[in-house]
Image (cartoon, rainbow, N blue to C red; front, side, top):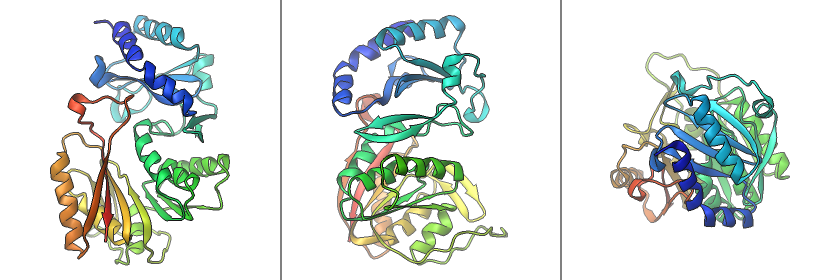
Length: 335
């Protein structure tokens, strides 16, 4: 099947989803998930009044891009932005050469369930400023944060933290190493008038989390530790843990395949008794049940107990083979 035909089918499948999104004041979502819908490495998303086309394996030909653009424009006449990320490190390869591409370099405002988020489809980083598959996580947090304290780790542009604040959280601490991401998070807080609730901590996650958990900071063997913000030991009603697949610093190694517990243990210790921790793992090859069992064991090793569990599944705009999405999200109640 041609790219145009599989895109037509994907749009048709989402008719009910599009109607519901409009009712929910949501104008950012996935319209084509190539891995599952017939063109591996091609994703197409709506971000406000723009269609964002991204390729991760192979560059689109001019003819393919024209066909896709025609199909999207027939659905809704938005700006077309194409980011070719098929090279090393998934960085955008193609240059901005026309008005639609130049549009991508200007700040826009998008909405999800009525919450405003800043958007810029080409910026100094490589990913869009809001990860759309995490919508279900933001919805959970918004619905379960009233009068609570919330810790948002690996916060990126603080979408989860803003959702918590909009849900009535008493205090939200957003932690991320990137000053660029946190600056976008501060803009998001300003857009929604929740700056007084949100705190933004620029720090490597390991020293921040270990201090909050009341543990010594430490670091990797023979590594000189850089400076880091000093935080006092604090427990939160709700902790959101969404680490990247792999990252390395002087303080430790983030490894979602081999050592999720390195982050999860201090996150548990930073969670109040009777509180909840939202755990995310986006590695497809990690088995859901095996990962869950390891989380329970880790909680029990800290002398704590898992009192409840709830899986959060991605929305219909992110289909998966056998309903087994690579992004796994589970909420654990902990005593």
